[in-house]
Image (cartoon, rainbow, N blue to C red):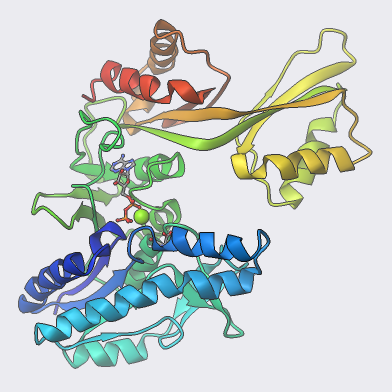
Length: 403
Ligand code: ADP
Ligand code: ASP
Ligand code: MG
């Protein structure tokens, strides 16, 4: 019998009316005789609302308790959806992560799923029941509730598809699939029928939140084909699978952007071996991720300026760490947190010369200054002033024939 994992995101379960609509989709699937495991997100806006509540208590809200709080959103949708299915005379049951259990490892609010017990769920599936599981959470080895990072219900769905050896993993969301760029920002964006794991991983890591990046990474690692499709239309979605199955006619597949970047320049650091290593070692020990790095050529051979980008939330911590470390000497630190990262992604870039210069020329034609650059085999990212984000995406979308 076919086994399917169906995941429904926040907007798809955003109201009780939508939950009833989701129940109808599941009823249709279940009438085809498949074994079905459903993963749900919290109703849209709920997780943000809960974070806001925690901040009203404290800006340094205890992380263990934050996980207890945040995990509650998905519990609500699980019960509502199971109830809606039962009303349609479908045998359905919610199973919370501690009941299964889903085991995670790592720090609170950012744990990852490492194991899952299958016995109880298999028994229910054999009994013809539809199982509803809350995304985004699990329990640690010592039984504490954990969450696995924002957008984490995608990762729950993929982990379940892997552990239960599902025949398909369908990600139902509020757009028709993966587009060449965010269709809610650029209406001429085009739906992509097929995309490789590598490209999807780059797009989601670079800001396309339609799929969470760690979910794509797991799918790629275990070769689990995914389909992203709409809860609200019956249109064909986007298939995400390995590269051999895809023909590339275009050099660029998609454009992504992220506005949670900040640029920091440390001015007047000593120009000698080991200084950059010292700075970045300190930041890495504090779990601060440095993305792009530029070091100016020193004119006096004694001092230089090092520029790098970090997440906007990490700016104060970064400055504090550099200030507190007496071994790192510098003249000043300047920051710009009104920047955005714009990226073009495409497996076809590997075999197409000139993509880099076309991107730079397109931005210069729009009078947009490039503040930092980073590249990999299938992506090219630049940092620009945040106010030019939309203009840059539109231009790149057009010149790389994506409109
Ligand atoms: P869900 O709640 O279903 O998980 P998300 O809000 O996490 O949905 O992701 C869907 C959203 O991702 C869309 O509404 C869209 O605005 C945004 N998005 C950003 N980039 C893309 C892209 N390249 N293709 C499709 N959607 C994108
Ligand atoms: N509810 C969680 C969030 O908003 C997880 C998810 O929706 O995937 O991040
Ligand atoms: Mg999501």
